[in-house]
Image (cartoon, rainbow, N blue to C red):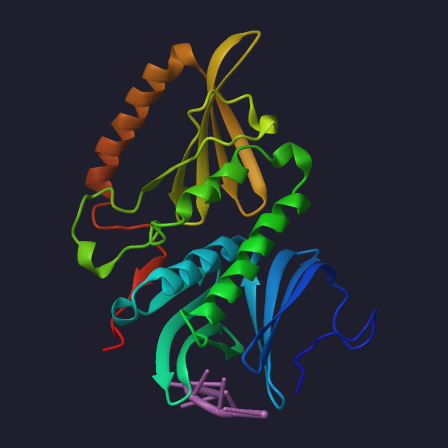
Length: 285
DNA sequence: ACGGCTA
């Protein structure tokens, strides 16, 4: 039973525009990746197709890089110390669980949203070295890369370099159960950006940095123009970007002002975290 | 060629 609300116009499957389609075969399963767009925004539809079964999850556009991170996590972690993860995006929650049976290991990705049946896809780990998960991860990486091309050109800057730092510390944005009581600022992850050889990224002076907070990313770039030096701070959430330009002469004031709010918010918001990815229990024995 | 998954 298809839950399509509109019966008439356009083409049965909805008139959402397909921006990108990829398929992946893992063992006997076929996975379809469709990056699509409609007036409400972009999303990634991932379908698992077996001979008799099809199930689909819908990943909001700004969740694609989180999916990529999580698959990297499961690919790169040792079998015995992977945890279940949950990822909240907008109104949905995605559950990631590793399981194993006679057929082998698998990753269950389950989408729970209000007023829709839970849907699940199951990705086989693959025969050797999690190659099924790795292939899945690679597709996500390609889509994540390519999706930048659909952002209007004047919105692109140092985002391109952001992902390159992620090969090893895949858990970067997540709270792991081991570090539950670290710093009060634990939800703030600072990532290093790598200098790109690319010549189209020149305006920054090699000090581009990224902070990730929840689904937002803040890019810090030093630059200069005919008025002098400045720090540009760009907020990127989904495909939206906005920036402020701080003249270098005002940096110290800015810093002190932020410090002021750090102080007073300590008192007001103690114990509140902004994290949306949690490690929950159940290591696979 | 599978088939795992609380609906």
